[in-house]
Length: 408
Image (cartoon, rainbow, N blue to C red):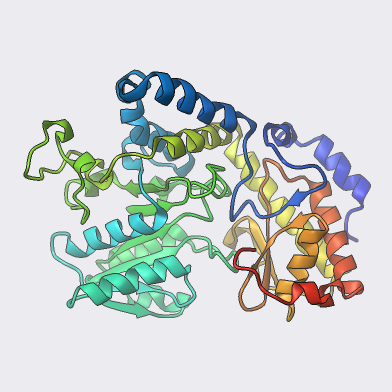
């Protein structure tokens, strides 16, 4: 029998992560299950960004590059994110967007010593990953993009291959065995670029132990950095000297303030910084990362999986018409749960109107993010009750929900 609301409330009362909920500016009457798409606003962020605007930019002006340490923000925040990744501080840098960072790492890996000629990924990967790879293949005559089913990735890899994979699939929530993939692909001479956008801040990661060499990730999902927050790039220390960023911007120069005509790449990860850091975005991201670092990541990951288990059990008890898309095994999934429904878009719109915010992914998937810092067990229980009401009353058939909006 699925747990009662009272048992869920008791579980919340005993949850060591429960106090974090008050650290977020969540609206009353809303159960926010879309933090895997856009994280909630930490309460500290508004004041921090206001201080950057009013004091550092307004009063400090250009002096704040040094006096407020703007200049080192990409490395400083990157080193904090590294603690969530199981990486060294000098292996992570905050820069640009996830899409741009994918482009940089793919190009760098393709042109590294020895040369590679094939980008290998799976069909149905996150669109920007596929689109960036398609663009590179279209621009470089000697590069081919190949897609194969996920269970054929390893067998298709060889010494000429750069494998591009999303660690936790954005739609299904299925998680790759990172260590096994890295080991097998490396054994065949290839290299893997991981997209960690749906992993970092949600599950335990240890890139060093898993043998990861290259990765990117988003700052605005579980890291709660705000819409369009800067992304990060990870390059294992042993690869840094042998990779050249395809975007040779002035902040990647060995001495950017020498204003030399000729480009000379800086040491370590510096070349992957490219252009001037987005300080306002970095300030907001740093607040989200600092908050995440206050939590015990093992507790956070365990609670995320417990919430997923509860949500799946409740849905299958109360909403038998939905088809589970996400793996049942916590070891092979992330921290969001997806179900399939013929009228998925309309179902989600009806839920949102009733205060349960998840999202929809074409053609028929409704997706619910279990973000442990601000979602509790009673939240998950209540969300399923509202979902059951939407399905039982056919509320989704309301004509208002028939027209698809651009953003859901």
